Image (cartoon, rainbow, N blue to C red; front, side):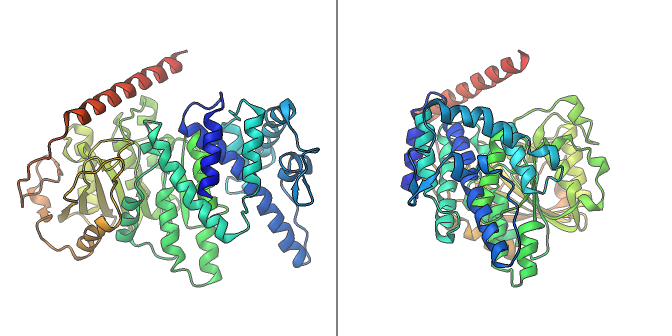
Amino acid sequence: MKAEINRITDILRRDDGISWAMQYTEQISWILFLKFFDDYEKAQELEASLNGKIYTKLISPEFEWSTWAAPKKDWKIDRLSAMVWDDLKEFVNLKLFPYLDKFRDNSTDYHSMKYKIWEIFHFISNRIENWNTLREVIDIIDWMNFQSSEDLFELSQVYEDLLQWMGNDWWNSGEFYTPRAVIKAMVECIDPKIWETIYDWAAGSCGFLIEAYNHLRQKAKTTADLNWLNHDALWWNEKTPIAYIMWVMNMILHWVENPNINKKNTLIDNIRDFTEKDWFNIILANPPFWWKEKEEIQANFPIKSNATEILFLEHFMKKLKSWGRAAIIVPEWVLFNTSNAFQWVKRELLENYNLHTIVSLPSWIFLPYAWVKTNVIFFEKTKPTQEIYYYEVDLGRKLTKNKPITFDELQWMIESYKSREIWENSWIVKVEDIKDYDLSAKNPNKNKEEVLREPKEILEDIEKSDNEIKVHIQNLKGLLK
């Protein structure tokens, strides 16, 4: 399976319409989705037939995968019937995508599969320029079996790799891909239970929810448990079209066929309007930072700031149920920043929530996507904070692009989180000892010299930063046109 996906990415790299890794991941995703959905409808049709019922397919015969993409004869693609040349490209661009884009016309239920299909094909387009490229990719994907649990599991692992590789070519992929070792450790600490709702309104590639699903799947004992897990447990949002199709596909590959998803900017919701029906038991997230929000977005928050990281923190706090639990990754400056907005939000967090644990993650943990220093804050909506347990993850080595953090290296973090043991890498701070709401994770137990970096590495980071600034400028110019 991995070899086949590698073949597809190599084919797409040669196409004139594909410029970078996120685009070929997007293109693989929509083709994979249509093949999956064809297999899904066939399985639903067969199951209904065995139960003496009739299943009405969502996709009309003309637009079924087995009609336009891979018509068969003697179990092989019928080359005489299969579309080629400009016929294939024109069908996809002028008929298939417009047809799927109309699915919202008679479906306003965003939980439905029909609505999800519309959202996918309304916000993306076929970027593949060469019809032969499209034909080659279709032929490879056609032989993937989405009705086989073994093949589906293998493909889910390969797709995770694909999302990770995406970061090598696109500077902002940290928004979509959080190291899976960190996600798994956070889920282990929070330890979701059956019938607890889990929320991530900045989903990226859905890593937190997939890991939470895997965690809960082992605890599901009854049909009711499984039904709840597949339909009512996981809730999330994503505003970018490319991320949307990728995490829909990622969830499907991890057996969540009809997830609760929404495509919009999370921050457009006025948090003053949230009521009990909008609250969740658990929040797991790595919200975007560095971005700035305009004044009309800031108006949705009692404490206004143009920094997305502080707005997301306000949002998540207001989304948490009483006795609910949250684990959120924040950049280091959220902890030490003592400007008005940051102080006010942190005061709210300390006075109305129990910010019981802060984990300091190693520098460079998001390589190659970003090099910002981050922390995980754990809090509950129970009582005011009395003391904060700090834990510093010290690996004794420098993280690199080719040697990322592993789950085994975070075992002490999980154990310390549960035991709250005090040792060299952990300490407790009383809330009355915190000045100006500076929550910095400064380990009092040791004065460790920072590992000096090689000059070549520093120059590479400067060059990468310069490239990011150029991308920002180009994006801003595009917005001004």
